[in-house]
Length: 202
Length: 355
Image (cartoon, rainbow over all chains, first blue to last red):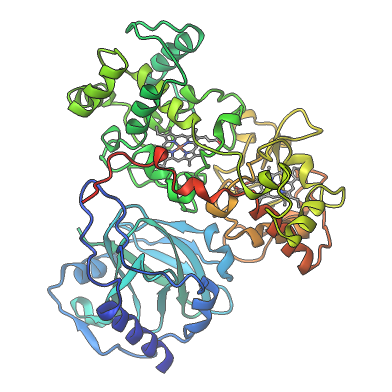
C-alpha cells in the first residue's frame, strides 16, 4: 500500500514539475500533435518495467481525498451503478492486453472478471486528443494506466466519491494528451468482478 | 467491405471508367506522376474536413511518424467505433495487389480509398452522406483553388479526389533500408547478428521467406495466393474471434477461417502493434508465437491453443529456435526498416501550423 501511494505521489510530482505538465492545451484545431513538445519520454522504460515497479496491492481502505457531492463526473459515476454493466474478461499477462479492447463509454459501466492472480490487463482506446477521463472502481480495487507519462498524465489523484459515499467508489482522473491505445492494469479479487467506469469530461 | 450505398457504387463506377481511359469528364488529363496531382493528393490525404466530425483524415490514421499506421491496437473511426482490424502501413503500398488484410478483390488504390472515406461497416471517415457538401466546401477554399489551377481543373470531384490521393499514396515508401544497402554491396550496412538472422529467415528450418518473399517480404513463393492462418487463435475447435475470421467472412469456406493477407515486413520497427487485430504487442512476441508453432492463449475471452488450430498452415510448426537465434532473427527484421521515412518533408502534413 505504501508503494502504491508512493507511486501516485510521484505521479503527482511529475504532474507538477515535469516537462509534461504545463501545456496540455497548446495544440489548436489544426494540430493533432498534442503531446507536450518538451516532454522527453523515458524510452528505456518498457510497460513491463512499469508494471513491475507498481504495487500489485489494492488500496485497503478509503483514500484520503474526497471528490465533492456536487461534482458532475462523480455523480455520473454514481448513476452508472444503476445500469447493467458490459462484461469484460481481463487477460493475465501484459503482452496479451491487446486481446481485450474497450473505449470510454458515457452510458455503460464495465464488469471486469480478473484472472486467478487478481491482476488483469486490457486495452483502453482513447479516440481523441486532450481527453480527460475519470475512472471509478471501489476502495478494494486499483487501476493503473501503464503508459508513457508524456501521453497520459494523472490530473486527479485517487479520491473517494462523495456523491454516493455509501457505494465505496473511488475516482481518479487522467488527461490523455494524445489519442492511442493505453494498457490498463486492474487489481482486485479474482472471485469478485470489478465494476469499472470510464467517463469522459466534455 | 464495399457496400451498395449509392454514392460508393457510383464512385466506383466512375473510377473504373477513369482508370481505363485517361481523359476524364472534367477534361483534365491524368498524369500519374505529375507533381501537382501528388501535391493535391497530399493536401487531401491530410484533410480532416473529409470526415463526418472533422476529426479524421487519412493521415490521422496513417501517421508518418508511425510508418503511416496509427499505433492503435485496432483503429477507431470518426464515430469512435472500434474497427475490427489493425491499421496497415501505407509505406511501399503501391507494390501490393489486393488491398486490406482480408479482401482479395479489393484491387487498385483508387478503389480502396473510397472504403475509408465512404464505407459504413465500419465507419472510418463517415463521409458518405455528406461528400457533395464536403467537396463544395473544399472547392471554395483558396488553397484548393490554387492547387486545382495548377492542374487546369475547374473543380474537385470524387474521381479527382481518389486519383490524387492515390497518386500521393503511391509515392510513399522506399527501397533504401539497411538491408537494401547491404544487398547493394555495402557489407557494413547491417551487423553480424542481422547477417545470421538473414540466414535463419531464408532457411528451410523457419520457412519465413516461403510466405514473406519478394521485395516487400509479402509474397508467397510457392502458393498461388497469399492468405494464411498462422495459428493465432483456436476458439471452440478452430475459430478466430467474431468479425476477425479472415477470408472466411467473405467466402464462408471453413478452410478460410483465420486466413489473413501476408503483411509486408518492411518498416516493422515503426508499425507495431502487429497482426490483423494488433494483438502482437512486440516483434519479440510475434517471433515467440512462430517459435511455438502458433499462439497459446490461457486467459481472457479467447482461451484456446492456436498451435492446434486445424486450419493453420502446415509450415507454422514449432521451430525450436534458441533465445540467441530469436535475437538474430529480430535483428534481421529490423534491418528492413528505413527510418528516414519518418522525416521526409514531401510526405508530411501540409496543413500543420508552423507557429
